[in-house]
Image 1 (spheres, rainbow, N blue to C red):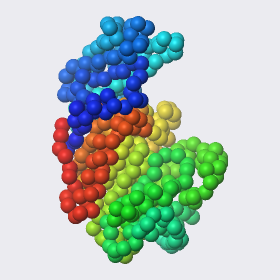
Image 2: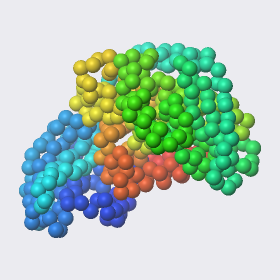
Image 3: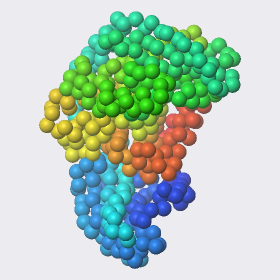
Length: 433
């Protein structure tokens, strides 16, 4: 298993340079990369800004297994604006350290630190449904019976040397897949990348594909919803407040009505269209996305054997059964309903963990140890199901949004992967851990 962790020196250079971390209280694991062996003591270093040392003299801490169940709790007195907390969790898992206190203004302060113990050994919270493959085989057959009927509308790319257009495709249930496509104006055959979107209801800017096309890619960007790409912000706001309000829970009590069924099949249909084009080189097809886009990319790569590489950052939808197992909740938060077994059962057919075991291509995966939207325990468990070589970029100081530039190491690696793929080289998987 090939995992890559960020070098400690680079991490703390970022720490020193980014204003977002110039906060009253900080908590950092003693190891810069945040990765520990089973049974190894984790020392958490607490720091207080110089102007607050006279006010913040103690902190309360809670260590959360997988970001969920509290496994250690207590209070620590600070000396000279510094302190340390020692914990010894032995189970392979990601751990979230929550530190709280009160500032000079009387307001509550709450900060987080992250660490992972034996991340290559973290397992899924629940087994894969026995009929998972049969279900998706039947759904792909259902999609195959729907004509693709591509409708291409040419448009202005707004970028010199790049062609642009929008493409509509047929999907199940009379739905439409809305995409945008860009390619270089010169040349006949290009490597392809399919770009999948994070959560929310919004329009898609042309830059999502024109930037890739300017670098020599045939790029297709897929709208996650059955909506046009370029309406006004007010249009998407209305959709988000009405028809698509809480879309993640639409049809969530049945695998045949789940909102994610149409979404994932739409990704597959988009890949079919991309591969049907005469300007695809027939060799390279990359699935790429962040958060919800990561979930879609993992599902697509697990279902579409023609995908040749995958790059995903802080992928959502990993380990839906984590909450019943005492782990932290991950988007789309299916298990929050707890007692609704139908929802949890439905979610198992759309869990990235169960698609991952079908993946047979090199994969790059970014995980933030402070992420409370895509819980790192679930992301690690998903990565561990991929049976071939992969590279995980562990981002010890990153939350889900990557505030402060702490996801930069992932994007640097993704650029390196795409550069080598475009040149016909093998992906530069780094080993580690």
